[in-house]
Image (tube, rainbow, N blue to C red; front, side, top):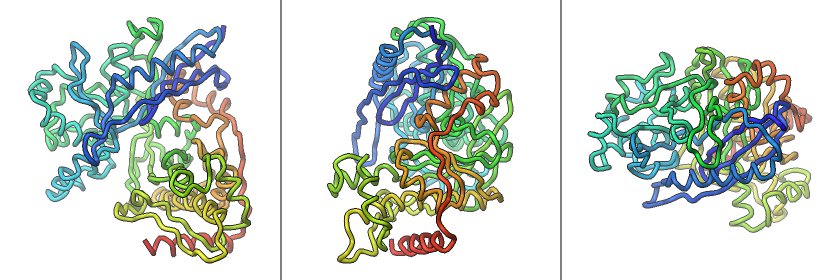
Length: 488
């Protein structure tokens, strides 16, 4: 019988259950998708009963292919800013969950900015006033759902991000962790507590908020779940991007990872220093273990893998996403073509929501191979911009970048990433590092791994990309990219 940790990775379009053994080998994994709901333009909602069914199905499928196992603990990682309220007694949500992509509170954020409150928010939370984060979503729910505010003030309904709701469903604990709390606009990342001034700003009653606990540690045991036995420890939690940073064993100050999914998410460990960015990045809590808080700088590019989907679904120059690498290899370079994949605006460090994607430098000799290669390079250049900003904020040059996410399988793009950054890039043997981080945290919470050093020792590389281009070649890439940016 094999001892395993269960990691539940609850994402925006699907839920994954991953079983990991002590040697950091994936015993089995399964993913089940669920629908998003779009009641109005810019509104995005989840029916959490559909999320729960997807988790049950993914877990059942993972167990079916796992063989004889002994479940030691459960870890949870989640889409961070999605939130909901539910009835304390019945467990029924008062409304669908509002998803991190939801923009319905944009006017409210603009109103708060006009009142001069953004500096206060940034100082306390490390964030900007944007509908992306949970606080204005919570306010909207309390103001819109009939009777919700009164019920919240009485403590009859509970608030939480998806990690909180899952933990409550699994073991009845109403808790969250600092990585998720730090994304709500309600949590002071310096004092590590819900902030009364921020709560007053959005009129959120404190008694409906979860207790904030360390990222690793026992909070309860499963009970009456149905698809899981009773008595399994629930002992590890982190928001998805911080979980990926932990899953990449980026435990030292200055260590960084880039996750290439639908978008690209870059985090750098800044140790015990909550560094304030002067270059358009977010300051966030990475994790808190044994009462010690570790911080990170974060930058996001909105489009990464989605650019390859565009090549497949809109341009039709590939039939599967995996074909893009071979198509890009049909040419020696981009042939002077530049692609800026700003389909939904530019994220960090530019923060230009009105920017739109562009293809420039086309000639009669340009081929679909040039466009494919330039698209991959455009994604990598977005990550380059973020890491340049991080290095400036952290006042230390990047030493190595760890790579994960589905797009990290693309060797051509990962080599280009190493070339333009001028540092070694290491691809994790387990690309599902969000789930890996949750498993590591849960294992630490029960002593399955005795220390973070044991995790470092167990972490493995699947690809090592060494810079191979000259300084002059890299300078040309950077100049061409900046020229392309200047045209949008």
